[in-house]
Length: 75
Image (spheres, rainbow, N blue to C red):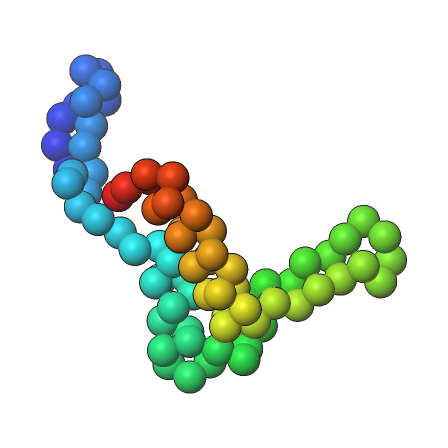
């Protein structure tokens, strides 16, 4: 950590990269837990619920990442 709050130039993990998708999704699939529930979504209406597994979440994250790459988004 560097800089100071007084000068508004505080830095943490400068020039570092963090793969959030790996930490939140991919590692669970790699460890054999892909069929486990990753997310439980509850809608506003009773009975309007959905459970999403890590494999399903990985598939959806990959779709979004590929669309973003195609649009020129880079890390």
